Length: 281
Image 1 (cartoon, one colour):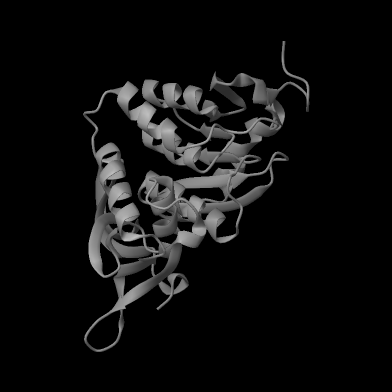
Image 2: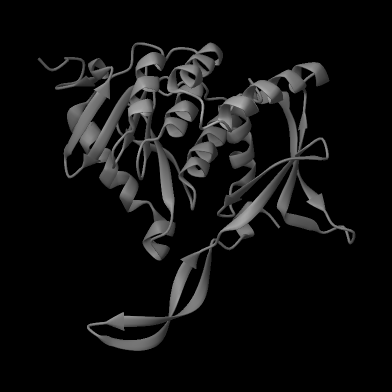
């Protein structure tokens, strides 16, 4: 069974109340299932996700979190098979082309950072900064085009439109043309799927791209985008203080509250122009 064959939605009975009156009906809900990721046959981590594009999710996660540095370090992402030889839908095994000693060092370093919400912001940012390159210069997008991206993404959010329970991440070029869109019940997963999509096509770093996400801009979202070299990250909601700090350090333009034709730019505003190529005064 491939990604395209997996159901992303299920029908569930619900008692619906409307105007003080209830009736029994059927609602469409987004599927949430665990995905177990193994490295060389050994259990590595478990994430909750919406099935679909699992290979992109795994590749993007490993890259964005610093466990692999280039796409070629991923030799194969394969489905684990049960005793009858059938592929397990929720278990994948990753074969890496990384020396054992190097992999152990990466695992120890990156698990410390990604799992330690108690670390102070400065410590987290310094650690991330040491393993990512500053976003390249030379990218700009007009305020008019940028303001249109939220509507373009919203129009393509099929899973959200059906269930109301999925986040989205979308990649746009400087002309505002949609390159790829992924949805998932987890907003971090949606970003990982986009990064994995780009990895599989040899498009990293994404120095000429806009990453648009639904929901808020957290430190983790900016971290993943910065690792992929994204020039500008935008969201329909607000950024956190640590997300702004990391974006400033990483050279990433951070845009929040992008909706209804308006937005705020929190870092590196020079990439957003009043007219193409002309910064606003």
